[in-house]
Each structure stands twice: as structure tokens, then as C-alpha cells.
Image 1 (cartoon, helix red, strand yellow):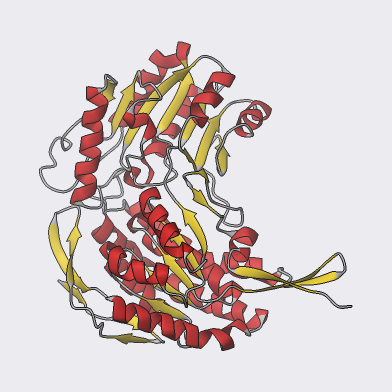
Image 2 (cartoon, helix red, strand yellow; image 1 turned 180 degrees about the vertical axis):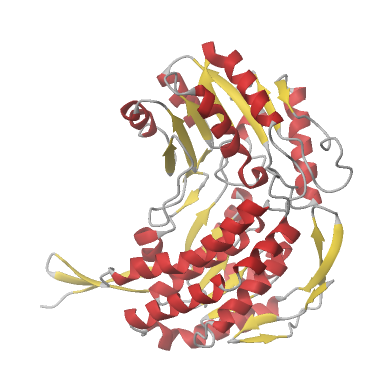
Length: 472
């Protein structure tokens, strides 16, 4: 039983003023594995004050000094990679292959930021003026439970590169993972107050972070609903806000795709991270005349997926992260059946043989119309909707008929054809014939999938303000 009873403020682990104890539950067994004491408003104000105090000196550090800090952070996190992997499996239910990748990705974020920083020019000439890019100020980083360490590290890396001090609020459901990351950050020996970390509820800690006038910037990843609340709260003090929000990403199989390869790949894209991924391709768009073939291929692909213990290397899909998420996904599956979609695989209830744990059957629906609830709302679980289209124009229209626009996928044997369709999609990222990731390319969404971009040059500049200096 783990008892996490401290927070990280001003370079030290300290007892919080808050007293609420939040249970940590293993989603595979439904057993309580620990508790975390949550920070309150007073703790939040202390963390903001520490970041504000550290800002003047840290904002004046050199590029070389910050690169060295990023390299130390990388070394510190990578040294805890196995421990972080195991915590992700236990606390979140991430399959071991995914959990191992995430722990490496978290550490790599610091080297990617260092690479971006090394070539970045903080002064440039624009016309007759000099433009100086300066740190925006105290920055709040709010991260989700489905990608805890990766989100913390990728956001922090760019804030450090820019010269901003930070207050980090991860999900309280990820406290074990957060503790490992916090200990690694402490070992990297950055100046006190540059990194502050609070476990706490959104309506308490999050509200104070979103409204406190000493906070200049908020970088949030999470649901669209919560993002809207943060944006409203931040408005009165004109905080710089970036929001990486939900998605309902389309995967388009063009008629010239290799369907034997593309359909299993599309299932993996839809069910990545147990289906709890904002970039999951949860709408599969296929030519009307190829539907029967796609259905048979999808059945076969799902039949080959193992749902179960995330520590087992053979497992493809682990449990949902918590009871609320399990209930949410079950409700959406029921809604799909009620609205007349054809069940191809999966369905309601737990998979056979799994009587405990928040396990969901990987579920595929066919004959889905794009106006159905399961095609329009983010389910955040292993549920895929197959939608047919007539031609390329119809496919693009269906793909773009969504409140979201985070990610999209296109499969084709003709790269030019795929590129043509990709450029017509309203999405912040489009991957062709796979599930690629480039940590230096911008990430973010159109429409209600968010505001702003992360990673690389765009991510660095989101933590900077442009000052124009002109002389007579």
C-alpha cells in the first residue's frame, strides 16, 4: 500500500496543507493500492509564489545553461524508466509494450527540446526593428491520466527551454507515476522553484491555477469540456492558454489501399492505449462496395487481440483506467445498439473469463451513420465505428463533419492520392499509411480539438512573448 503524503514546492518535498486523501485503484484488480493526500488552495498559492520568485533569475539563464538542465532531466527520467513502466501498468493498466514506450518517450522529450533550443534564435530582425523573444512567465502545466509522464515531460521540456518557471498539476489518479517523475526532477538539481508539482482536484487546485493573476500561461491537455472551463477562468487575467483537447479522428481507407494490411492497422490505431487516446482513429471510413470485406477483416483482427493483464506481453488491450471510464464506455456501446448500428465484434459487458477489472470488449460497429452518437462523441475506449462513403469527396465531407479536428489517418497504395486527400482534411495532424509521430513537428487540433500547438519550434514559441524594439 502506497501512501503519497507530500507535494513538491520550491525544490523540496513538503507536507501539503490540504488533508483530503484520494484512493489509488489498480484498474486490473479493482483493488485500492494506495492513497494520495491532495493539495488545496493554500498549497497552490505557495507553489505559484515559488515559481514567481524563481522566475527573474531563471528567465535570464543562457541557452547553454538550459540545454544542460534539459540533458540532466533526460538522464534523471531515463534512469527511472523501468520503475515508471511498472507504475503505469499497475496504476493505469497500460499494456507493457505501450508502458515501456511511454517511459522512454517521456525522457526523450527533454532531448528533443534541447535540440530545438540549440538552433533557436531569440533575437531577429523584422523590417527596421529587433524582435526579442522572451519567456512568457510563470506557466501552469495541466496533464491527463491517460498519458501522465509523457504529457508532464513534453510540456515541462519546452517551458524549461523557453526559460519559464512552472507549476504542474497532473491528474490525481496518476499519483504513483507522478511521484516517480517528481523524484527524477528533484535529482536533476534545477534551481529551486523552477518546477513545482501538486496533486489536487481540478475544482480546487485547477481553479486557483486558472484564475491566479501571477500565472501568465496555461498549457492544458484533457477533455474539451474541461478545456472550455479553463479558458473561461483564464480570461479575466488574460493568460496565454493552449488547449490540447479531444478528438473523433477519422481513418480513411481509400479504394486503392491494401485492405489486408490497412484494416488491422486501423484497428490498432483505434484501440491504441486501450482506446483511451485523443488521437485514436475511432471512425473508420471505407468505400461502400468494400464494406463486407472490411467487416470480415475487422472480425479477424479483433479475434486476434488479447484483452487482459497489462503486464502480460501478449496483451493488446488492458482495462479502462477507472470505474467511471468503464461505465462511460459501456453506456456508449449500449447507445450504438439502441441507434441501430450493426455489432460486428464485442458488445456490452466484460470479455469472457474476466470477472473483475475495468475490462471492455474491443467493439466494432458497422452500418454507422455519421450523425449517430457513437460517430460524433469521443468515447475514449476501444470502440470503432465503420462508416461507408461513395467517393473521395464524400469521404472528405464525412471526415470533416465533426466538432473535432485533432488527427486523421489515410491509407492508400498511391502516395500522391493519399497526400491529396490528407490536405483536404480539417485536422491538426494527418498520418499516411501508419501511426507516425515526429516530436519536432507541431501537434494540436482544429475546431473543438483545441487551441495552439505543442512540440518543436511551435511548442517552444508557445512559452515565449515577442517584444519589438525600435530605435529612431
